[in-house]
Length: 139
Image (cartoon, rainbow, N blue to C red; front, side):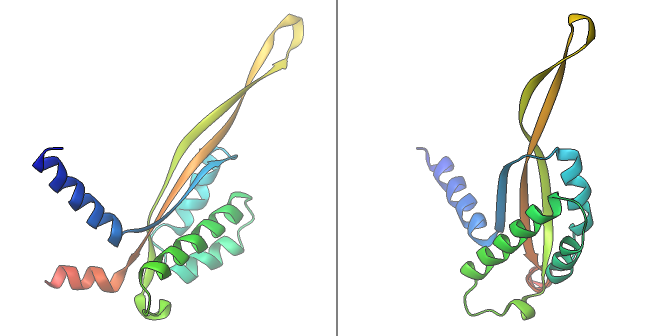
């Protein structure tokens, strides 16, 4: 491994240590339906986002609520001794990508067959702290 590659890999590892995220893979709902729910919580404070997801009617909101709780637990594991209420956590990024597609065939009239695409998605949720961003800007 070259020196430049080693240095950039080290910088990437340090940035990953400070970033708090949770990933949910192969969720059996279409990406479009999941994006409708993720747009509701993007940029919201963590407690408000949990309330929004808890009282939302969509089925994908239950999965997203568990993912948000997992991201909070990941943040607490990295920041021991810091209180959750004082940290001013918010949902910094939510990204929904298309996952694998299961292709099925449904019989149709006159000997034809219609293709059914059962879509899935991957969700990446990143948390940020407003207090840390204010400190970084002032420095």
